[in-house]
Amino acid sequence: MAISREELRKLAELARLNLSDEEISAIESDLNRVLQHFEQLQQLQLHDVPLTPHSVDSTNVFRNDERDAAPEGLSREEALDQAPEVRSGLFLVPSIME
Amino acid sequence: MDDLTQLTVTEMRRRLDSGETTAQDLARAHLDRIRSLDEQVNAFVTVCEEEALHRSDEAQERIKKGEGGALTGIPIALKDNIITRGIRTTCASRILETYVPPYSATVAQRLDDAGAVLVGKTNLDEFAMGTSTEFSAFFPTKNPWDLERVPGGSSGGSAAAVAARMAPVALGSDTGGSIRQPAALCGVVGFKPTYGRVSRFGLVAFSSSLDQIGPFARSVEDATLLFEAIYGPDPKDATTVDAPYDPALARGGELKGVRIGCPKEMFSEAVDSDVRAIVLEARERLAAAGATIEEFSAPIIEHGVSTYYIIAPAEASSNLARYDGVRYGLRICADSPNEMMKATRAQGFGKEVIERILIGTYVLSSGYYDAFYATAHRARTLMRDEMRRAFQEYDLVLAPTSPTVAFRIGEKAGDPLALKLADFCTIPANMGNFPAINLNCGFSGGLPVGLQLVADSYRDDYLLGMARAVERLLSVEPKAAPLKADG
Image (cartoon, rainbow over all chains, first blue to last red; front, top):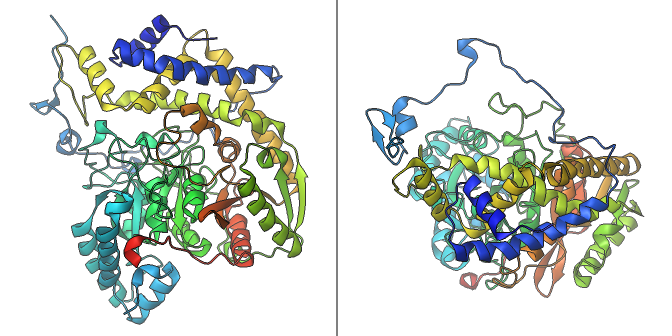
């Protein structure tokens, strides 16, 4: 199983990464070597084995649904403080409409 | 006055409480040492001189009033993926190069409340992805034992800072070995607690089901003191657990009659022969002290690296989606939001991070999900179950921490797969969620060799107690690397 250059371009698009052709080809060989290594996992007999997506068994950890039980949040000023661009107390992004 | 940077935390505490020294003296001694040595070592991304002096004043006030605790006035360093209110936190990435967080991680807050004095933020592989600290976007950290070699990673800055006595203790994070491996390569103690013991709130997320914060120190006792200041449930991290922990057990430890298992797969040809010989020699000494040593086989260990390098990048690709140039961090301007995000991420992330995001995106995409991601989680189950079976037979598992001593800077940087394969001794503890600790057990060619002890889940107290007994037996003195400026 190998990633083609075309597939890699699509993945970069999905991951929102603007990569040049040179960068794509530099990554291609690294990635395929790693993926090749992953193939050894196919040798394992795993059909009946359940998945362990997490280390802790607990489920649905809730706090009380009360205003005072909620952790203190950030003020608007604090939340905006590190933003690259701000206008009228809002995060500013490039125009989304033509 | 003798050199305050030589002391253990326990000795610092004694001198602070008796008035022989002050928190300001300790802060200044460590800041001076950083100033004179860190040009060589490059352990720190940010040194907090002003804050440290201010905090040491406050700590001294508390001590004077008799209100100090175990860590009041003790200098510490934090890996720069642990966020600190008002102090730049970079993850050694261009994308966060100027980021100043508006709040602190729970561990940073707890240390602050305890009166510990933060001297600086330490270097790491970008977003903790790496095993050599060469993937820092800023500069590589050097190993204090040999400045031409890597300190290990990803918590290489914290390991090097403690080894070079620029801080007596430091925190790192361990996802697949990122505390234990640099501890091994720098000859210090590095402890990865059971997942859930320490809050991850404010630890910049890499692989959320595996990341765990833990201490670096020059002795097990000091590591225990730091751990005890940070562990315990946190309402801000729903994955923290309230499992029993007995401080007395962490201070005990009797080797006689202890059953120790050694997985054959971690003593294979893949381990450098000198490293293996030194770990085996230490093992002999444990046997001579009355421990029972047995070998066992857990073939699933051979699949640990593949399993890890599917799960961790999958989680990372999702976690790192938040760096989009909108709310904080770097922004590269472009005409549309989509182009802005693509340009920001491509320029803000380094090559290793980009590769892992792409691997993660790939293994999670439809069509490959079952073949890779689900398969890896099934393998993870087997790994946990095989290790659990081992803990029915044995009290502890013993193995090398790293298959090699510190390698030369640049030696493996061009071979990302080789770097990843070297993680096979540390990954199983993350996969199965077991506490694990590195101790120095000797030297090969003047470079430290690490021994790893692993215990069953939530037996952190037992593990620390046994590690202390092993440390005593091997008479591994708290060591500091011989740096040129020491003369």
